[in-house]
Image 1 (tube, rainbow, N blue to C red):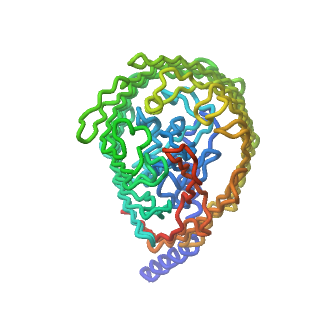
Image 2 (cartoon, rainbow, N blue to C red):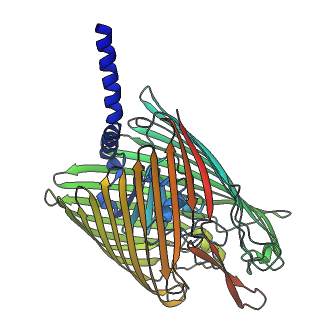
Amino acid sequence: MVYKLKYFFLLTLIFSAIGQANNVEELMDEYTNKNALSKQTIDANKGHLFLFSRDRLEKMHARTLKDVLKLAPVMKYKENRFGLPDPISTGSIEPFKSNFIRLYIDGVEITQGWLGSGLVLYGDVNIDFADHIEMYLMTTSFETSVEPAYMTIFIYSKDPKRDNGGKMNFSISNNGSNSQSLNIGEVKDGYAYMLNYSHTLKKREKVENGTPIPLSRDYERSQLFGYIKSENQIFHLQVMKKETDSLAGFSWDASPYISQMDYLNLHIDYGANIAEHWHVQFAYDWLQTDAEQVDDMPLAFFATVAGNSLYATYKNSTYSGEITYKNTIGKHRITTGLKGRLKSLDSLSLRGMGNLPISFDKESVLTLFFQDQCKISERELLTVGLSYAHYVRNDNIQSDDLLQARLGYIYNGEKWGYKTYLSRTMFTMDPFSRQLIDDTSIDPQTTIGFTQEFTYTSENNDAKLTLMYIEDKDAFVQTIGSGESTYFFTMFNDEYSFDTNNKVSLQLFYGYYKDIFDMDHLEGYGGYLSFINSYGIFDFYNNVVWQKYSIDEYITYDWTSSISWEATRNLTFILKGQNLLDNAQDSAIIRVNPLTGTLSKPLKYQLTDRRVLLEMEYTF
């Protein structure tokens, strides 16, 4: 009789568990959301936040930073004529333009120093190691960077305390592209360890240019990311090797015979809390670029030394360091410190010629900053920030002094919130661009911004309206005309949760630009609509991104759709379609006849190929 009662209670528990499985899953999802790692890293004073949470990244099945940047406000994903991520690119014969979009991993900036922002290589980086991603648009807190920024992107890696064990991902698409990644995390003896390795072979649609050799942008990338951290210390190691077909490259008329660039990148950093209120951090970035460019016409920038063919190896190093003091004194949260960076062009060698003598090969910057966050009331915060940066360059290149200031007010009510900033930000041209245009006296750009943000939060709904007015003086970032530009942006974001597993998200934006690039004015609008749904062991994701600018012929629609099947607790299969309407955002390559200086019709191509992927995830 006792055994029968045991079996009876056992069966009752089993059937009860089956009947309540969905409720348990909902409770676990709710617990996970409430205890998300992002709640520890979000700083309301960093600027205007656009968050991609752990749950959202997983439901999107976002594999690269490109998947996220496609949904970014205003500065969306774009590529330059070298096939590299470059959201501010115009498609013309120019170096990397997005130097002022700064990228951080676990609070440490990834930079390529002489070239500028780390986005040049990491703009489409594999993010299987990422827990969540924060984007702060404009008026970024001065405590974050050695150098100024239009937008800062913070990628925060997974924590072994939450992700102990391993995860493997395999992906293959109908055009032959494939990727593999492995992520392992462990906590042992007070230290947390994480190691991520990924490999990607990306085959992309060719761009027809009217010659027998269409432009190619295929690439193969291997990436290693790892860290060791304790309560007061952290050490990161990143290695990336990327072999690319570099689209139009240095060909003026976008008809190269050969256009290839290979990159080898190393990043190391160490940070420690050395006292109660003091933190120090050091970072080293090294990049080697091997370029092979052959054309029937003289190449851009290198015609005098290389003619029609360029076989070059370029190396540069960047050293960064900082010491920061944080303390709360009464109602004031004080943050101040000193940051420094040294950029070095180590060598530029040409095949058959050896190392070229380069006189301008050093740039250093020293930045002193101060920030006070004053608590006016339980719900109000007044913030003041000041930053002074001094740039020094060798070879009699002019020095620059950048003075920046920001005044902000933040109100957080139970449901309503408000945030506003008045800011003055200064930018100086990156050394690589300065070197290519051979100009020793380029004045810094001054940007004045006034921004406002209104938020409404309820149990199921999060809505935000953001307004921005910006003026550039002595502009070189987004203009080649008058030197002065003005912009107005308005963005509306709304996320409604029917429950923890079913959500809908909407973004709408409108932008008006005056005296941008070589145009009197430019208007643009767009947004996205996404649905996340879960039914038992099946998850569904659908997202449509659309946009149109006044210079475009039509509206572009980029539809991404996926369905995932949780076959077992450890094994999931995903079927994913990208650009299913074959009408995604396009980019243009400007073509110039180097003999006559006349313009040809630009080459247009889609930034996202139409394709179908099959993926498998396995956790252990």
